[in-house]
Image (cartoon, rainbow, N blue to C red):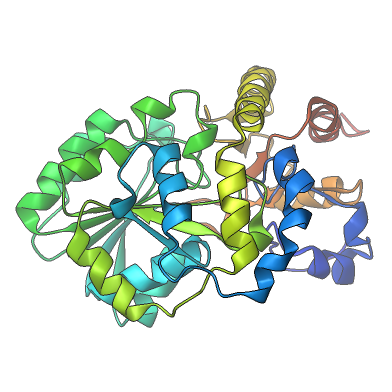
Length: 367
């Protein structure tokens, strides 16, 4: 067995080649959390016909794209700002608000803390508790908010726990944050995969709270991480104006802007994705949840957090086993508050999910 301390992100297929000697083309990434259907069929069919768009600059204000997004998320297009992936928007928002003390719920995506630190701020974590199945205890959390905090970052559904906060609970959090002068950034990268999306999304709340900004992108649900198209929704038009004065013009290229309009209108693809993920999420959770060697935490996104209960197996052991068979899962020991017993994997098509489950659940020879 290779002895190393590398931990791989879902996009680190080049590193996998170097360490394991497996061609990246031969690896199925259960770590990247990307829609297994691939890009929208409508996009594949029509984008090539739009190639001449690269001969001109895109609309500086992206009005047509923003109107399309607004229709998709049911808000006014004036509430939409677009960017080069949600990563750019996270950076722009944090640069604009310049938080000195930020609170993040952990374990979660590391980019929030990195951007806050780059801006000279300090991040404090409120830990989700394993004994509560990593679900947020709203009343206890609110009790930890105070006037010294100026930014709260929530990933909903959360990565890597796949747990979510209801809109009802989010209202209570936003009310408390208003009292303390805290701005709230909600990352909804995975919300479109959730069965109960209308009860989770905070977009309707942007009509009532001016201390709220919501981030989304096309990397995961629309399987287009290379497109680098993200967007934010907020009812705070002063914030939008300030961000627009900071951001560079034309950060979304002409083809990406056109692609966005095509994807958001592909209703058949959107529904097929939701149906597939819903069925596989339920099926795989039931299989793992009833196994004595694993504890599965009920997921709401397109991935699941699992704890290994066997004393003789670690997350790295399972990573090594699966990668040697061309399947890449996530060793979650680098996330705050998780140790070397936690793994995360996303849901793919049924036949691939069956392959992964068979590998994970395989009994060792000595047992």
